[in-house]
Amino acid sequence: MAPVATIDCDIHPAVPNIAALLPYMSGFWRDSFVERGIDGLEMQSYPPGAPITARPDWRPAKGPAGGSLEAMQVQALDRFGLDLAICNTLYGGQVAVSETMGAAICSAVNDWIAEQWLDRDPRLRASIVVPAQAPLLAAEEIERKAADRRFVQVLMPVACEMMLGRSYYWPIYEAASRHGLPIGLHAGSMYRHTPTSTGWPSHFLHDYVAHSQTFEDQLLSLVTNGVFVKFPDLRVVLIESGVTWLPGFLWRAFKTWRAVRPEAPWVRESPVETIRRQVRLTAQPLDAPDDPRVLDRIIDQIGSDEMLLFATDYPHWQFEGDAALPPGLDPVLIARMRRDNPLATYPRLQEAIA
Ligand code: ZN
Image (cartoon, rainbow, N blue to C red):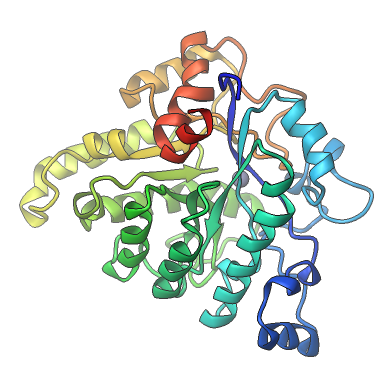
């Protein structure tokens, strides 16, 4: 394989319908979905026709955007010169209330993505989707798929049933850590709780903007409950979190930790150091103005140029044309985001270029 120049850390193949998954299910679940007529489990918070759901030029005449490998090859893999791309499949198994149904759907999605996508384009890698509503079943699913080295990450929605630092979730982190798989927390919710701390918003606009607060909450939960101490090799990737909230968040976390650290003595170092070392963020959607000096300042305030990962978020509409990166960025930073940072974040991607 030629030297890798660009790695996309967030693209979205779409499961066309439940029928596509039935061949990857047991007889019981096949019968259940057919006899009960269950379908339409796309895990998108917004209406299918909403502009943010798919870029107009990436929206097919029929079926969901992201539903065709051939379209993805033309519109993303070839168009952006992607050498490797991580498929993050968003589908209802990750949010189902039934633990066993959620696990069955997630397993089917993982087998489907391997056979229908990874087998057909060597540039593709994928996340293992897991039912985080059933952490022990999620850990079993990680064990089942981890031997396939094309799976490079474990994927969960950022808003689950509890705060993610709770020990309830630690079996997932233990399995992921042992197999060298980062935990990807993607924007999205099980909607067991309101997306804001004070109630249900009335509009998608509010829901979408408020999402960065959810990322802040979960990140602080992971830090203060000692997840990064318990699993020192674990990496967490915040996907579609935005990035401009991070400097202020780090400053507040550091200042408050200094004041009340006796309360949590297991948090042995500043949250800033922990987060810089073990947390990464994808850079689309980028919630910064076009002025490159602003992003330079934000990275300077974060204190690390190793945290941002290149992503197109295909087929979602986050930027126009080919401008997956804002203009005027330092070429050294661009190379880090496109190649060095993803390779450092995902150990299994290093095997792809070895
Ligand atoms: Zn995404």
